[in-house]
Image 1 (spheres, one colour):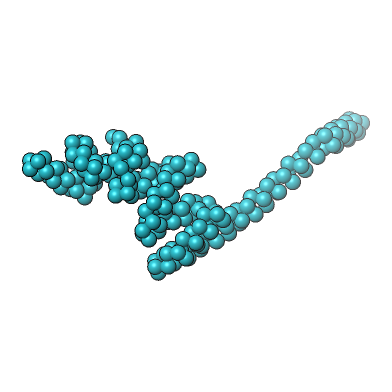
Image 2 (cartoon, helix red, strand yellow):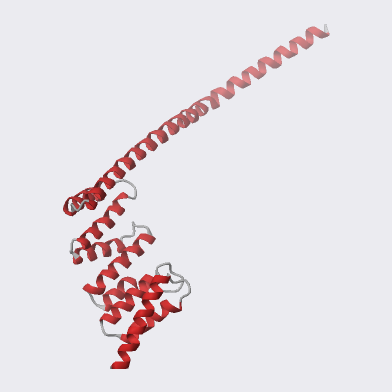
Length: 223
């Protein structure tokens, strides 16, 4: 009799658990299924996106290399057109790289005004990484040494000539040369002295700065 009672109790408990599971499934089942579907779709979507981005990046890389080949072969105008197309349709960082190469090619073919404008535009473009914007300012500043005024060079690079900035030596050299060209020898001396006194300045830049300081000293003695 006791065994029958135990058996009956177990059956009742099993029925209760079964009903509880059914109620729980009716309540939570749709949510579980929805989450499972979203996980599957999310994984599939990520894979599709990954393939799409890899494919586009690969295509842009091939376009960039082809444009580089044209430039290396001396086909400047064709290279400029190829880089211009990449600027418009390229993926990832390739449009910015194409902008830089286009600006450099303009300088190489003698279009200094166009090159300066291109580098200045890159320097102001907030979508371009800060480090590359700084490089663009330096490139514009150096081109302005022979194609602009000291004030124009200063507007491009003086903010980079501060202690601790990784491009301070190039910025100071550009400022020193621009001042020297403008006949502002005292100002030029200050910039070149900052380079020479900077123990972390590249040796070649420091050597050039010392040569300019010697030239300034000689010029002031004879005047």
